[in-house]
Image (cartoon, rainbow, N blue to C red; front, side, top):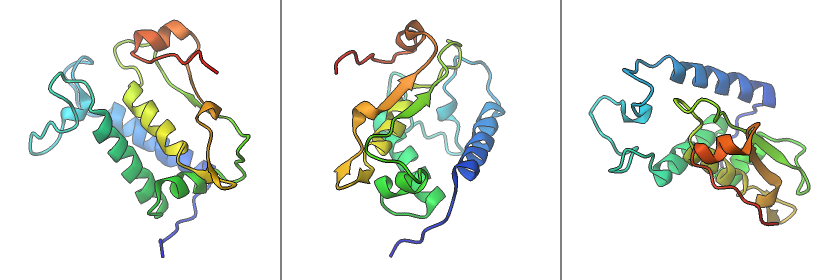
Length: 153
């Protein structure tokens, strides 16, 4: 049986904010360097050969993080535990920061979070992907940062 920790939204936001601030304070020589390449043994497994983030590795990192945070072994159940009261008709909005081209929210990270959210099972079905909205205040910021806009229904 999975060990379940009880976190509410306030705890999740507090922990996520602290983690985000920690990431902003990591030593970097310039904003153009990849912050995911920092580690003790020089392993660059977080990136592909083109220095772009490896989406599969980022997905694994996000999934493992939410499972560790909640103490729940199933990714969908872990995300669901962070969203009490969510229904299959709910909409989840992910606000990304793409205005600064020097340090935007990487699409691989936003897509990994959306993938985790879409694995939640509510009323016997997975959470609808169309109910997960990734946004910034201008569409151009999203496309300039490498996001693919979904204009389909």
